[in-house]
Image 1 (cartoon, rainbow, N blue to C red):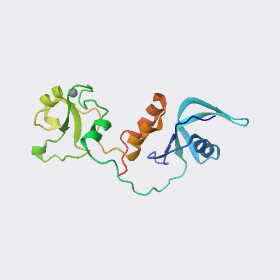
Image 2 (image 1 turned 30 degrees about the vertical axis):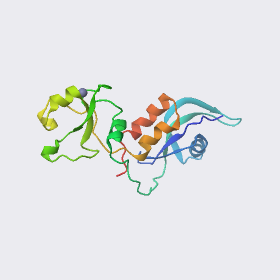
Image 3 (image 1 turned 135 degrees about the vertical axis):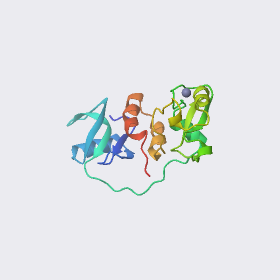
Image 4 (image 1 turned 60 degrees about the horizontal axis):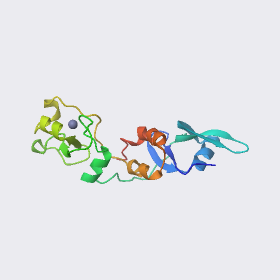
Length: 175
Ligand SMILES: [Zn+2]
């Protein structure tokens, strides 16, 4: 009996590659082609094998993957990446807006690496200044999310498994 959700596969370099079925993950671990990186509490039992199903596995050998473009930049996707929270103070809900870390007036680009969600208070505090001239700091560096970052929510996995994936997917970028 295997669960419905998938297992995250990392390259030997720890870069996220894809999701695979639990069955395939178990086989790869038993064959010695992958190792468990993150476990969850799900125990797999068959007549011959009892093992904890990993949430994340890592390939023993590096696999070259074809180039895959990251997620397109859009206001909606920035909200998703930043999980509807201000990236300066962590506040959620209310009036969140897009903030240019380096202001546009100083040549800052409208791009994944320079745009974050900010609450009204932080936005006002920051004004039209670059970050280092303010008392604010970013909770995490803004990057372009990988295609897997958004795919993870479609897997229907429990929160503990999603949390295990997040470590590897949150800031992963394929370019
Ligand atoms: Zn804030």
